[in-house]
Length: 251
Image (cartoon, rainbow, N blue to C red; front, side, top):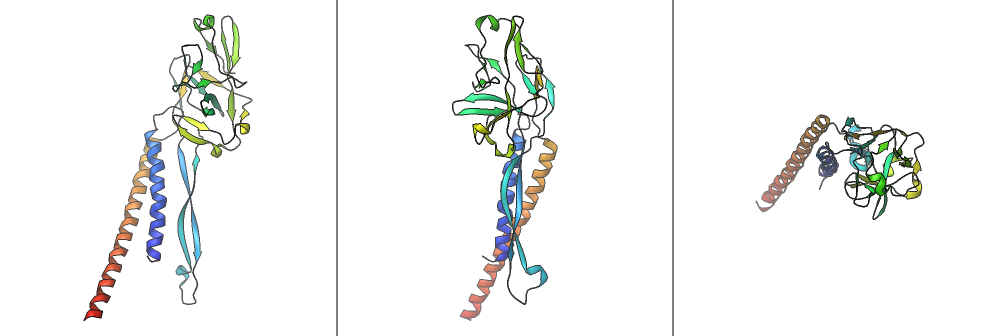
């Protein structure tokens, strides 16, 4: 394969990854607490040797998929009226304990389990500021539950505990596991959010803009098609050249 083919293939590979990420963003545009992802591309420059090369031929640029990063922009907060729906206004993540360890989430849709523990939709226990599951006693379960903006959980009988919000210095070290959960690279990297603002009865919507993502997908798909057509044209040209050479040799 010649240089044209390698250049087109490098771009097609990058565009394929971009389409996958954009499609995933669109699919989660209505998922509470979802954070859209972006693909970071870079160019690999290959210096060409030769005194007879024109200026534009001295450096070839190949596309590389460097990484996928998280857009942590806060989504819109919407009212639900459910006392166990919680939203974070500002930085930080709720902590839940899964079977694999502590996970972070911005999806604050919680409910009481049969034993009174506050859990997410997967049954993972919501953790307090001591990283312990938040469990309500039988007496507390029948009383209205209040959650202040400072994260204090209480009933008319008094305070129960305080929600624990955590964050990491570099959000791009968080690994998205699906089901609105993020896995920290190391639990020791977690640090408490000192000034937290909790909104009870609200949920944070996805930060994906469907119109922008759809536009990006159309643009990427068009560029993909153009590069694929270039690859096909170059392949046809080479086949025709081979056939011509073969004809001349047998003539």
